[in-house]
Length: 367
Ligand SMILES: NC(=O)c1ccc[n+]([C@@H]2O[C@H](COP(=O)([O-])OP(=O)(O)OC[C@H]3O[C@@H](n4cnc5c(N)ncnc54)[C@H](O)[C@@H]3O)[C@@H](O)[C@H]2O)c1
Image (tube, rainbow, N blue to C red):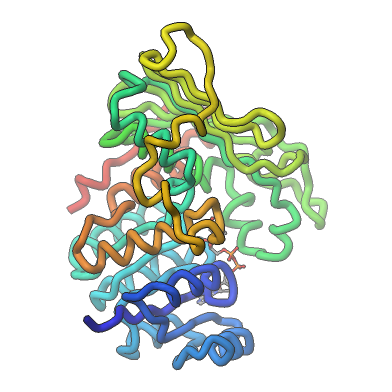
């Protein structure tokens, strides 16, 4: 079978982290790199033995040298570049979030429905071992009926805002949970088949200034309460500004028969209580339950262990390639990508209106 020819857009930034996995995969080859940083992208192509280097994404898409692309550019380019590729029936693996406005998300959904190309959003935190294990335990019914979850992305990146300047506008320059997919994504894989129907967002006020002494438009810590279609509640926190040691994520899950709290990044490991393992309500360590991991995580290849974001950067590529080969549906297809992205966009409206509940549209109605 011919190899799937990949092009990577944003190849001098986040896109570069896909190179190793794509070059190691037996079914794929990288034929093109693209980045507006001309010197870097040409040098990267030479160093990696990749034939084509572009500085314009449209030119790469039109050149007929790729079957699939990775969109690793800053957030406002994700939807336009994905739509452009899907219109040429090119498969798209897009970085998070799927889009930066409800309107462009709608256009993206329509393009994905019309295209013969596969669309998948690269929500890598859903592949982290602990998140996968909790999902398996939920699927086996250990938690009973789920009704509450927490997800938090707590990543102090004031300095990164000055290096990757787009973040200063598209992440910390907008008030709301604008970058929610790493926290909401895993939660939605636990509440499988449910989506967020309404959000109510609130923030903690502004306590930090950037290098120019301007206050960040995003409040230091923004939390959105998410009403799920099954009636449950998820609390999603995004904090990119508060001074604190690095930790990055926090998750919790509550059902009628089980409870989970993720590791605290310092001394406390991930803990879980499941009624049918402990009639008494006593915690046990999550890693005691690794026998319930799916096969792929029980014996992971060396490349998965070396890949970034807890192996997520590796597994998402495997799933995307399987979807292109029609062996499986994309793990985060267009509607799930919208379920993970739209609540954050709607949270901007909620917080601007003084923390009112605002309905989240269902992309399944966008035909
Ligand atoms: N999933 C994750 O864990 C994760 C981690 C980091 C970043 N990201 C996402 O990846 C994306 C990129 O983030 P980053 O930190 O690598 O940013 P970055 O600014 O370091 O890299 C982006 C790259 O895209 C290039 N670029 C910008 N506009 C372009 C255009 N129009 N066409 C072609 N190339 C263009 C830039 O020159 C740069 O090399 C963001 O959407 C971010 O949210 C995801």
